[in-house]
Image 1 (cartoon, helix red, strand yellow):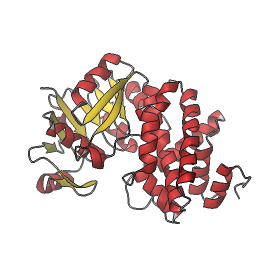
Image 2 (spheres, helix red, strand yellow):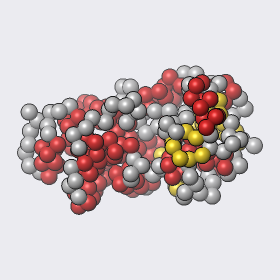
Image 3 (cartoon, one colour):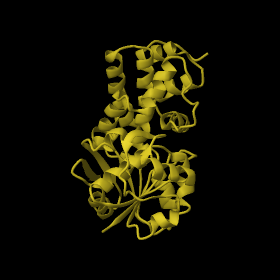
Image 4 (tube, helix red, strand yellow):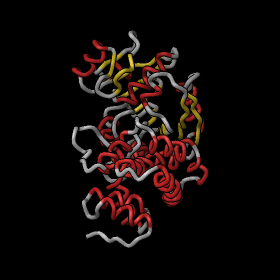
Length: 319
């Protein structure tokens, strides 16, 4: 039986490993810290990142990377974007990998491009409207695995598909990967709308406008137009902007309430991506108005209501 190594024991990694194991997949969950591994083995619950979702008693969990990769047919890289390159440096280049983080490299590079540049031959990305809290409980969900190698995307699909987890394939690696990056920034903006209690009409308008922004951004990167309207684009945008499970939306809600969500140590991909996309837009003279408003709010260059005014069409300039 093909073995899947799930590398990363955050909420998403834990949910994927648990879900695959429950559907008779050969899977091992790797956690970076030995003490956290022992906690998972003892409690059989990830109380830090996926509380309330019990882990199967016989799910293998280890902090030994070599043991996790032993006889693995596929590795799911499920660490935050800031840690992807460091982890990839420890993996054999012949290992087929699927990247599951929705973020960018330290210099704004696509994570899959980093992997290719490092010499990995089989590289894919997993992206879609998938909240770990629901997948871990076995609720129905659908996602996309994308790779420029169609055969590899199909192979990964066979490893990951279960009766409750529908996996589609795509060869539009750029579109699937970058859609997941930008929607996190939009989710921060949607959370700000919630924090300011601006209502459903305002958030609906924001999401619709965001779809056009996503379309412009992905097109500029060479993505296929239809990808924007699929699971990794529109589907993920809806889930992330509306769900109580969304960390990025919750971070924006705190901002809207006058709090700083960057305290606490957990990575908020949407905030990190805001800065990287701002730099990309400045370099390429691209029009990403929602990204720019979120950036200026984070940098305290404009007030929250000035940000609303800018997106509504009034001319409120940064101070």
